Image 1 (cartoon, helix red, strand yellow):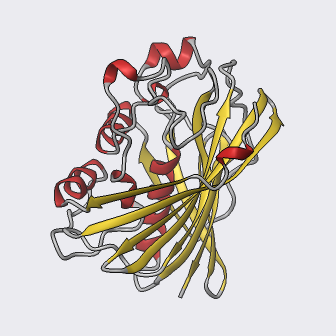
Image 2 (cartoon, helix red, strand yellow):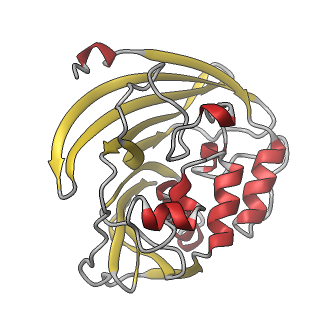
Image 3 (spheres, rainbow, N blue to C red):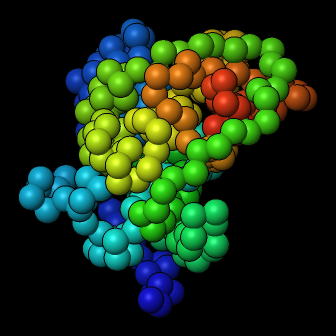
Amino acid sequence: MEYSEWVGKTQERIELIAQVNAAKLAVTLNEKAPVDGDPLPLLWHWAYFQDLAFTESLRSDGHAMTGDFLPAAGDRTRMWAGGRLSFMKPMVVGKLVHRRSTIQDIKEKQGRTGSLLFVTVRHEYIQDEETSLIEEQDIVYRAVTKAVVGEDDPLPDAEWTNEIDASPTLLFRYSAVTFNTHRIHYDWRYVTEVEGYPGLVVHGPLTATLVMRAFSKFEPEATVRTFAFKGVRPLIAGDTLIVGGRVEEKGRASVWAGNKGGIGQLGEIGFA
């Protein structure tokens, strides 16, 4: 299929950064909920700007149908591979945000499980006529084949680590608050029998949010300017999730998430 015609396609949305969404995410993560007028914690914006699709129109994997803004990709399943974010100023709870989205790039690659279609989407978030955040998301479409989990290198030495119970309850609540209907996060039979994972898959955005939280608690006075992350191996519910990192040099920290099987997500934070 020819995908070049999709590059440059745009979408505009306006949404209220409602306190109730932030409160639901806060109790999911066992954090204090921000109120109207407070800054929205970093990466909590993923609880907003979700696709609203009728249940009867969902694909077999639980995702909304594509072909409007995102390209249609046949019977391939869709996942979030990683992203890059630049933070200009905090979003404020209780105010409107305008999001302008653009498809930047589409590329076909070969992976361990076959052909992979990578779509890069750029989002600009504007509040009070000022840009708060610029984000690039890497979305990957892959054929529904038996997933490859494997094991990776041992977890690296770190200045800080946190252990989190990546329970099915945590995954379900995060799916609910982010309106994520991808069945690999909550449907045991589907994820094991159809997509071939050994268990429920921990969300990439949830993992990144936990990584960012751990850094912010280690460096509470730091102002995060940039964050880049990528998934390197699926992380499965039931295994203790370990997030950590270390400051490599002034203003730059390497961060990661993994479990007993090794690294699942790698990232880098730029801060002042």
